[in-house]
Structures are given as structure tokens and as C-alpha cells.
Length: 161
Image 1: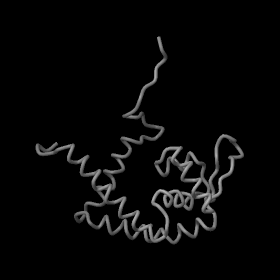
Image 2 (image 1 turned 90 degrees about the vertical axis):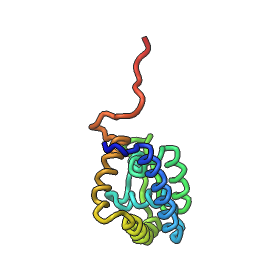
Image 3 (image 1 turned 180 degrees about the vertical axis):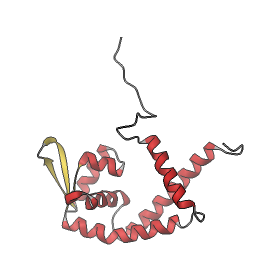
Image 4 (image 1 turned 180 degrees about the horizontal axis):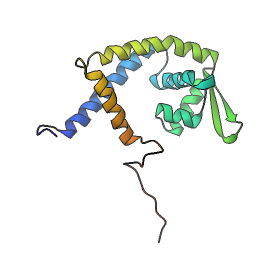
């Protein structure tokens, strides 16, 4: 690492950048009267096969807790953007399906979201976006390893003696 490298600066600046990004993307979606969290749920469903995912899959896609996701899905269901049904193969699970109304909303909001994201990424120095994209994916994998990778952070549970 270079002598003047400061890990706390990287972490703190990343948090500040993330706050700006989130605020800008929320603002872009406000004209469609949808929050970013709800948009991400609708978008994940729109991209899924049959526009249907299990609630656990949505938690993974959207990076929210199951409790937060339940509340979010309740709001989207009341707004008739999604439908929830017990999973026919596992009654303890819920299957979430995009409705016509949800499909219309996400289709209308997606270009606005993509345009704002492109505008924000354009603020990076020339040529930096592709390297940052790969670096961020690798960094995120540190925190969210897939099932083939041993977690680097977390809690180990052992039986009592």
C-alpha cells in the first residue's frame, strides 16, 4: 500500500458517496412516487422468470432483512403492485409476483433510474468506472460471500462443553 494510503479515509468517503448516491436516486424515483427500496423489489420481480420470486430470494436481491422486506411487501401488496401467496412447495415460504400495475410502474421508472445512475457515474474520472465496478463487486463479496465461499466476517457457533 502507498505510504499515504488511509483506510479510514476510504471507508468514510465511501459512506459519504453512498449517501449522495442514495439521495440522488431517491429523488429520481420520487417523480414516479416510488422509493428506491420499493423500486428495487419491483425491478427484481420484473427481471425474474415469470416475474415471480420467493420472499427469501427478494431479501438476497435487495439486501434487506426479512422483517424489513415483509413490511415493504405489505405496502406494495396494499398498493396492488405485487401479489403474495404461500409457496405451494413450502407452506412456510411466500411467493411474490409482480402485478400489471407494478409492471407499469417499474417500466416507467426504470429509464429515469438508469439515466440518473449514468449521470452520477459520469462524475468519476475518465476510465475509472470499469475498474471501480470490478473493485466494488470484489469488496461487496467480502461482506456478502456466496454459499461457495467461507464468510470472512460473522459469528461462529460451537456446542457448549
